[in-house]
Image (cartoon, rainbow, N blue to C red; front, side):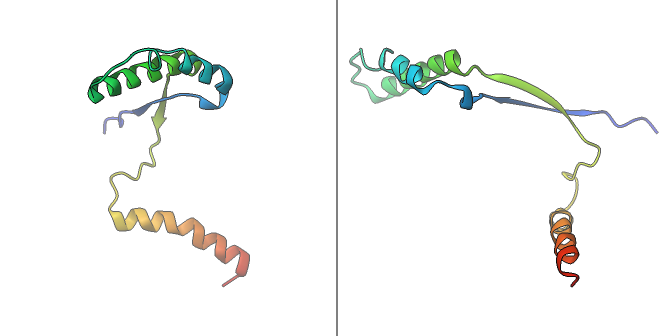
Length: 100
């Protein structure tokens, strides 16, 4: 039997806890959002997205992480089996505390 190939999960995130809010606020105020006059709402929404991403990339750049998915993956289980697996530790803890 051939070995099961490892499955990796890729996620991207920003560490927003490290952002200095005062400098972030200052950079947003200095951006093109407040200096330009745009009358079309779609163009302003595009500008808003671009400027917020630009400032976020400065203060909290995107980080990409990879992790291996374990062999005890429950994605192939039925909904009932998945719910039973989630319920079991809770019931075991209740039994340990109360003895019932």
